[in-house]
Length: 199
Length: 253
Image (cartoon, rainbow over all chains, first blue to last red; front, side, top):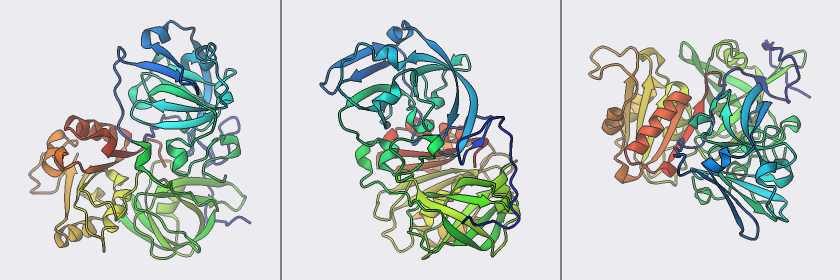
């Protein structure tokens, strides 16, 4: 049974389409990070996929720019309860980056400059569901939003879309990332409201 | 931000719990402290937050996260809420909620932006506006500990925006291990020697700790403020892994 709060009516905003449970609509782009914003010069930037066998696949910034890019329009949902609709991104699909990677892994750990990590099932990075994004609204991705490049996995809560991405480790066994060790959900599906462990 | 820095992650307590408002007291014209009794509250660490959920008579619900403002007193907890324009939960809590009202809470949440009494090294706290709330929980948690040395730099627009003003002054005067410096960005009180203006590298040098002491730095406030302060701290030689941040955006809770 729900507890009614006396006198509370709320200010319902019509989002035009349903939002995941417990979310509210924002038109801003709030920032959530656990530490300072790292600055990564493009000539030093690289993205590395490491398989469970230790095999490394590396891309420099120039090489990333040489890959086929896609435009993505998607809704994003932060575990701090804001959702933002129809955001515009440009980036390289993980399908492209992983196409020549041989692996038996079922899980992935996204690794960021600055030390952040987050774990995902590998299948959530495939089949057009995830990108290395480097533009937002037609402009270079701002560093506070994860530039020069971030992971974008919009069907999961945004903490899974690791900012300042530097690589992905492929893993046979799941292992919790930064927020996941601190009580946040291992999977993080906003439509099932998987905010915290046990949800 | 090494993974090993946090041992035994703090588990979020899953259930929504009924909470009864015991007291609401105004801190500033737009911020109030709310004290709740929460049967079964499992306790928390300074810096953690909780989710507050309000339900209207027709079943509509809205939930937001707020920082805990003090150590738990048994099952009694408190939060300080800044009313934000158009904030459906914050404006209700700051303006309408009254003693005896029921809400639901869930938590505690968050295990990174926390300070534990057994952490004995020097601590630098840098607050912008209502970002002082989780930092105040850390200051209040010093009572009865070995008293790690704390310095707070608190940036506000004007004297009337200072939350916890009297308590901070009292604590700073009674406690040799706590320094409190207030930085005014728009309007300063009479006799304030520092010209008004945004927090600067000089403020961090004058009122903070030298980087060589390797303080743990907690920075909380609006996004632009946190970006500025974190960058200045790195410029001053602080190790990025010793800088913990919490930000709220323009549309924040």
